[in-house]
Amino acid sequence: QNELLDEYLQKLDEDLTVIDPIIKSGNLTADAVLNSKLSVARYQGVQIHAKAQLPESIPISQVELCVILGNLMDNAVEACLRCPEPDDRFLRLYLCIRQGQFYLSITNSSPSRPQKRAGFYVSARGAGHGLGLMRVRQTVKKLGGYIEQADEDGVFTTELLIPI
Image (cartoon, rainbow, N blue to C red; front, top):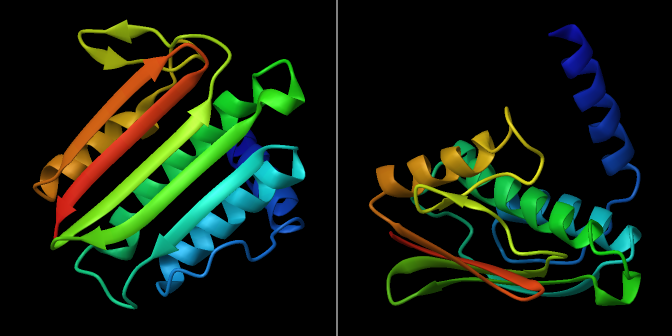
């Protein structure tokens, strides 16, 4: 899968050229993932409203944190960019420790209501996609957490809680 690897590395290189520090949560891993994704979104005209506050160390591994934040942010940004009117593109992020739990809320614009299969949202990109969200669900479940997703006209929201 060298072609896919080359494509991924090219996209990553493009992403890294536009990173601005938007968030300083206190956790280096979260900051690295969120700032890379939020910077790309802002660069592409998405209105960003973000607040994050985490301790320097949390009992969620860096890999698990990257799976959760990276995939959910990628999905949110992709949905925003599918909105035909640039002024309608927005992403709101809130991340904190609340009552002993890791809490994440992402609300983003979406041009259409996403499809569901067997009660779960499926990728708008078609067959062979959607593995990221499946990994997020698996990771949250493994950590004893809870994830909820909902959509309304033009808006998609993901919230999750993980006990820490």
